[in-house]
Image 1 (cartoon, rainbow, N blue to C red):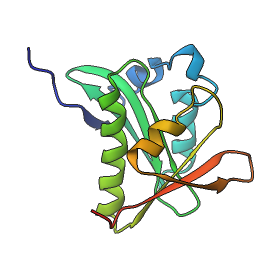
Image 2: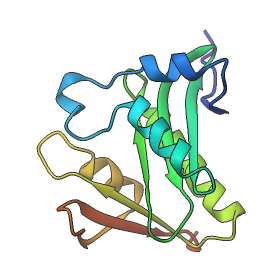
Image 3: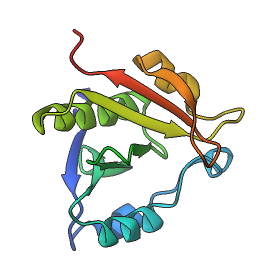
Length: 145
């Protein structure tokens, strides 16, 4: 059995409801904003926000949104997908950062048991401290091999 490779799709009128129906596991809700909230933020920041649906075959399995501005970071929410979809989403965002000429990928995450900290650290992000609102800040040098 062949598994489809994850891909990102731009949010459109045809798939926005699929995106809004995505939910993370109950224990993850305190770490990830609802997709509808993220899409509302994208609507008010159209020149900065880059929302994408993560698809595995024909099925929507997650959502990722990046902000391409030094004052912002990105969030990846993968509600019921294999772990590879989360790694894929972060890699795709980092490819887009490189395509736009960026050299550093920055993420923030809420602290807490069951949160995404270990995921980001395993991918190579380095914890840099806390933001003003109490989230951890991490970055990855995209110029390194």
